[in-house]
Structures are given as C-alpha cells and as structure tokens.
Image (cartoon, rainbow, N blue to C red):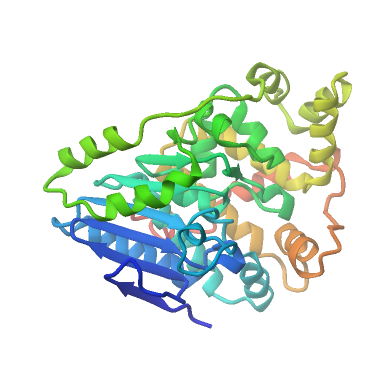
Length: 381
C-alpha cells in the first residue's frame, strides 16, 4: 500500500501519514511517522524526503531544515509521542517480499535512498537531525549527513546489517571508515549499539541534549523567522551547546583487534584474548553472516580512500549482488531477514557457515559492477 504523505502548515494538526512535512516560514520540518514500525523507511517515504529536500534546497525562503521521528509510546498529539524514536532503518519486510517476487521496486528503493543520503551530506542549508531513541541503518543514513546531529540519553545507535546478511549501506562505509582508528570496523562488523557519548567521541554525533528538552527546542525552531544563514548559525550556537560525558568504549582495545588484516585473524585474535569483552565480541561475530563479515571488512577498508559519491556507487553495486541471485536460491540477505523478521526462528542458515570458509573470490564478486559507468543508476552523483 502506498504511504500517505501529508503537507501541513500547523504544528498541532493530527496526522496519520507516514511522513509529515511542514513549512513554518523560513523553517522546513519533517517528521517520520511510522511509530509502530519504529519509523522504518518505505519507498514512498524516501521518495518524498528526496523531493521535499530538493524543493527546499532550491527555495530561497527556506533557511534551515530539521527532521525527527515519532515514538510509539505516548498519547498521539502529546509532546512525549513526538520524540523517543528516530528511525530503525529500511523496511526489511518489504526487502524480503520484493526480493522473492523480483519486484523492481526494490532496486528503486536503494537507488532513491542512496541519492537521498548523498543529498543530505551535501545539503547547502543547515540540516538538524533530532536523533533521539533508535537510530539504526537507514536512520543513520538520514542523520549522519546532517550539519547538526543531536543525540540524547535515549539514543541507541548502530549499523546492524551483518545480523541480517547485509552490509552497512546508506553511506555506512563512508562515515564508519572516518571514525577514529579502527572503530569503524568494530561497529560495521558487530552491529553493536552505542550511546550518545560514544557517538560523539567517534564523530557520529555533535551534541548531547536531555530528551526532555527536545519538544521545546523543536517548537522554538519552528517559531523562528530567519533572514539568512548567518541568523540560523547564531541560533544553533545559542541553543545547541554540547552536554556530554560518561563511559566510553576503549578505543585502543578496539584497534588492537579490528586492525588485523583479515576477518579470520580478527576473530582468532578476539578468541585468543583473555577478557570477557573480547570473548563476547567474538561470539557475536560467530553469529553474523560469515560471507557478509568478509564483504563488510573489505567495504570499510576500501571506503577510507573514496569520496562519498564513489562509495555510494560501490554500495549500490554491492546491494545488487545481495539480492540478485540465481532463481530458486536464497541470498544471505533473504535468509537473514527470514530468520530475524519473518519466521523469527533466529537460526539463519548462512552459506558458507563459518568465517574460515569464505574465499577471496566470494568477496570479490560483491565489488564487481553489473553496470558500465554510464549505465550505473547513480552515475549522476
């Protein structure tokens, strides 16, 4: 079913659509509104996000853009229902259904989503992302390109794609590879969740605010009239001061293991160590798709020397290989989504079954483009 996309002028309007788009003077406001699905992105949502942002980019009257997600907890229309959940990623149930049906809408989704990601990273106007609650997968793709990335004590940030037989896409190779040291490999391979303080430390967020402050801050922004970008910058400086502090992941310990030259060596180093943490991480990796762990490690390390546009083009090729397999066979992604979200038996049958069984040729196939440079669906980036 097509999502209903609604453009409204008043903040207090009751909305039942999947995306709420508001224009308040010089401020453009977007609210992801699929709370029961943790604001998972549908194809109509990414299409409308892309179209709206392009329109506002070219509209001289719009000086700043902000985005948030709704929360399934709380009374509809009340302040607490409008924050607490940003975006859990793409709609993986749609991915599964479309892949089995060979539905071309699946290709359209990824091409549109990656184009949206690139637009946000290169946006010419201030873009503020209120990344409260769950921020994963496609939610990271929307938030990481923002010029101001707000996190709270409730933020749960991750790129968990290897758990469903995928890789950290939506520009994940680009922004994770730019984390300090080898933090990017750790986050990409394990899919572990981090909070606000680690997100700031690793360059994945800019400011931590108390979640209780967000409704008033959103309303204050919506009520402003900015004449130019300088006034927006002054407002941001006055209202978005940093407030961080707390426990951090040990970066040096991450580097010790995740700087190893291969996936097999990373796991063996973790298993040979004596700490409970290293054994837990090794056990986590043993549950992920062995093939996609190797592919993801290669992705992160290639991405360190790539532009965002080139990295997204590479991801688009990789995603093609994730879903376009021989008829009658299941890809790692289809199997992973089946086990996690469809049958919910949590027993994916990975092929190969073990990290040590993955060959270089299996990995290399994901980085071969099925298109010429001119025919690539994202050649225009």
